[in-house]
Length: 244
Image 1 (tube, rainbow, N blue to C red):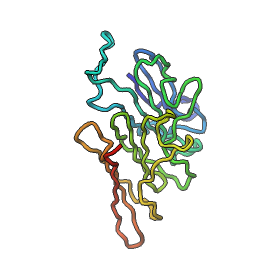
Image 2: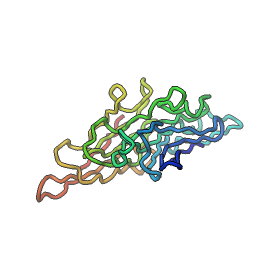
Image 3: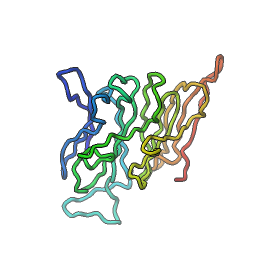
């Protein structure tokens, strides 16, 4: 079992919220998986942690550690767990303007330590978590909302709102090992809204298909904008396509 939780690492001098992972069984242990720097902290102990397990649902079965049963005729256990969390974007005081960051836990008995089982690595050659949010300057205090991740096979999708815009990021295994859309390591999410000057009025939500384990293909994201004085708010939508 692997679990993720937030804990105060310095209770004697104010608060310093950090994100940890703990694993039981083979390779049991505990490791800090946030950026692990003083200027980046988890904004609140009640942060809305989100996880995405792949492959989803019916593709996940029970592994018998005694018999080693794991053949092609039966469902397989999870191969990866993605964890999403808020963290200071630039400075410790960015509590009202955090970034969304993530790590991927590689499940199974890989022979690696718990810290080395994360991508980016949280081990001896430490790498910071991947920044889902685009690398933009601070426009105004804003709280990027983390909606429920969408999954299909080993793919993971995430719609989110940040700095008056709606974005979409998607993970798919690739040659660089990172998987998320990026430009030389910097986040490069799709811009989902219509890119006009009108401010985002409300990020309404994400609605996933309910007929099966594939919640990614056909998922819909809704938001509303106000197009000037005297104008009513307009509800807008995009749909994640059915093709990979």
